Image (cartoon, rainbow, N blue to C red; front, side, top):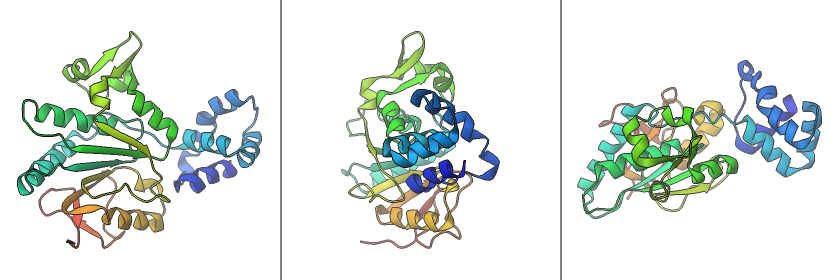
Length: 264
């Protein structure tokens, strides 16, 4: 089991807490079945011999828990911040980065929110870049396909009917909605951030699973691509305090963070 969790950490930086090791056998059963292997030891050996199998193991072990409009108040704060940025820099299109986007519920929620808020207005919606370390998760996000259970988590019926089509089993995000998002693979631990600067960066419930050293590294890297006056959004159980000097609690938006030093 240790060899398998080490694969997760080496590829993503995420550590599996001891109280969650029970997940290993459960989530890897489909991988064992698909590869025709009988034991976790056999899978560990195969993963060490094949990078592709190693990726399958890491993808299965990643915590991809997500839902639409998760912590809805956060999305309202983000919308308020974007409105303020538009007022302060008229004519410039705001940029949002959803880092660790999982199966796409977070960036799709953002796309829905801004499409609804700006309906009938003659201005471009924010540019949304969504990244994740898992290519399998990104494939699902790009397809915009969700089960009945997933679609009902956070979506009222009105939004569900407006932005998704059902096929009797699953629900598909409308192509116009998916096209509003630029999905790309990115490892926050080892890859450079997307090019350019962002007004809002959401990196929620990613740092929880990393060491303090990696948290500091990622936060400092995020600070290099956030605009002065921009905001960083972390998960409810995450903070920059004691992790980095690059961010501080936002003076305007409770629970969000801003660059500690404004750069020109």
